[in-house]
Length: 163
Image (cartoon, rainbow, N blue to C red; front, side, top):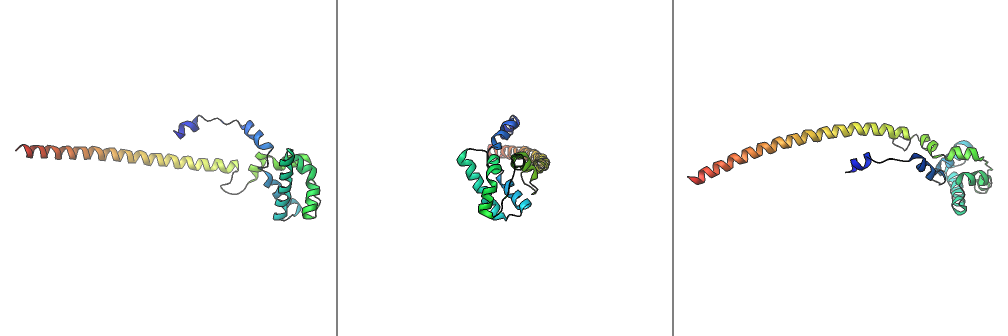
């Protein structure tokens, strides 16, 4: 049932990308950027980005826009560093596709890792299906043997009872 549902499922990539383009799901990418490129501590970076995300949610303005206009003031207030970022760089850092591709953790949500895992899982699925087919065949053979044996016993019991 699930196989049928999944085989007919079609994803509208553009619609999915549009949905995540104005949310804060890639905000950790901005925090990572602050740590890596500006030497901000992990804790401070996440505090700064959390504040920017809150401002974005409160104003309804995209995080990219808030980051490019408010990062300098927020980073100075929370970390004592004036860090500026322009809108294009904010767009690059917070782009969902780029963010996913930047994930290097094995088993993470990087599309390359997912494709690799899918290949492995497909091989495992074929192997499992083959094993299930062998077991079904074995069970059917056992069922036929059991039926023959029980039929033979039933005939023997019937013959004895008729005597």
